[in-house]
Length: 277
Image 1: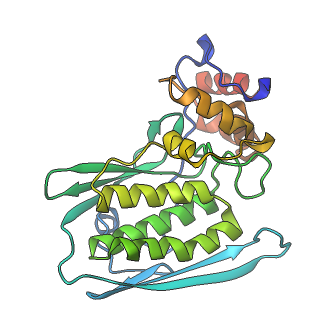
Image 2: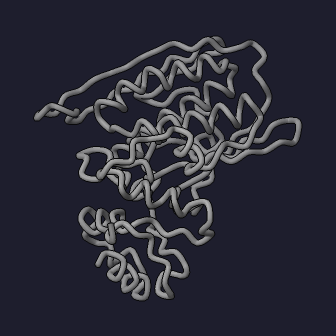
């Protein structure tokens, strides 16, 4: 389909990178140093940590699939912490990263005592999700604020747990209870599982996480019409070093971000208008 091609002519030789937003972890002010280094003992409406236990509690308020009204749902779990946790450092860098056509909003550096370091990529509002579903009310090609906030929270809580001695089973438990919320209110199962993969690989397996297109390919998704953009993206991801997201993503940005002309330079906005034609 012509509408799903990845444009690569002279106009788009350099990818147009849509700016993203790192949503706040909580509405309450947090000390910046402790927040960026994952040193917070408590984050309201997310977790409370003692030396031996992390209590995860996440509440979602929204309109789930199949419903017409806003409802609230809470999931909880308790994760035991080791007396002598594995030694590694965490640092959240609130700077955008463009990788394989995906505009991530931030990255977490995982630094082990052995000298090994790994990077976890964090999606934000307006991030392109190659596994998104065209026309889906929650899980489109463009990550919205609710989805990006939820994913940041589960990743943040799981990394705090790991840094304080949680086992891989404990971290997986956090993602497991969160998945019920994700499936009902966000629909981003693939992106959530990719975030979980990054945490487990970088923290416990001491391996560089797969890139997102490689992760998606291994899932063998059914690439039907509402994932035409995914099919097109995956066909180009392996060979195009200047990968540009498909047209559907930019059209979704045009529909949702009415002030996109204010977010881009004049030159980039003209490029954007060409991409959505």
